Length: 65
Length: 504
Image (tube, rainbow over all chains, first blue to last red; front, top):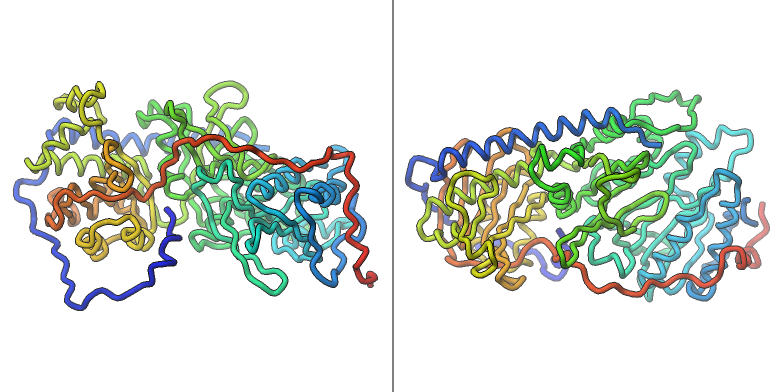
């Protein structure tokens, strides 16, 4: 991600009266996502750990001159 | 063969027209490579060609030059020989107008190209994502070059893996302020534990040694078996690679018995990916495709991470998609987005609108993910024309030092309005429980508290759209490649010593 463009945008302090609206807590019990979809996401996150373990195991076999 | 008057002192600048005299300058250093078995000057040819195609018009010879990296190699290894090579180097400085577009240290070794920093040539520049800024001091002035660091292996003290690790480590040093490491520091980090007075030639190393070296220099590396990525992650290797290159994080690749580094990518009109590769045998900006089978197969990805990043890119993207899907399911006003959202997991939920699948309706939303220091992220929001209300929200939202940002793109919109939402995931949270921190969708702004799937919601600028942080990497028409005139054996080396003082 380039940050070169900021050379032409000098830094400045925000207005003293700036107060950001962080909003209100959404109503509801938490997740609007069906249970099977949530489960599928959880499984994908586990897959990532497995993929890295497989990579570390493969690294033991590969020689580089 | 050591060129005449190596590293002799100069009374003033010595420069040459690159197009007409560059071959003679190059011939001076080609002599070093005329050594049976160990000589190799392919990288030297590449240095001159890249400089020419990056717009260089003149080359300056700066000598004697005391190079930090070569002097380290000399003190740890070469200086112990009965007939050691000279301690000093000569440095080439490539000039384009009033800019410096490259520097390259010539070592008095059979593989002369040492620490090199070149701007990408015009043909590859649009695709290079890993660019760091090197300060160059010469002739009493200071310049800057944006490029990817390069060195050739010397074939003795260091092998290709060391050169690849060095380039990644030096890039992270310049880009992210990590420590500066030399080849000898990398050899030590790989766990060889050489005694100071008993350094020995290298025969190579296992990929696991490389992982150890990265970890010990403060750049712990993720590792992926490329062949197994479609089974383990259920996506193509390019999806994994692209997230890190989008983040400006180079990707090491183990190929046959060699190691290369990916420093950029592009995508052809038919959707195939190609990569910009730094290969110590060739040069820093070679264009190649991923090889899935055969003797040149790409086997293993090694991705050293510069900061505290506990969460891998694929996991962060999954968690961001989960949060995005949850929000557009929860809010009736966002139902139009749900119809264009392809559930990537193959669950039983009703699929996205069939019209989008067949290209007859609005296009499906696209997902693009990158990692960034949070400081760079917030300072980039203005450039992307993110509305002030959203920008202020994200600037003041509590956030980690490193973030994974997943952008949700509407491909039907022009580039300046392509992003309809993005979600920041805490890269320092747990790999098995990555946490979204803040985000926005269609002008609504969100903040998630710890262990709570239900965010705080504000609605400061409904319908907001803005530009992506990521450049378009679509392939553009090829440009002509220039080369120096003169066949290698027909050119007489330039004589640099006509104006040099007598050697002491």
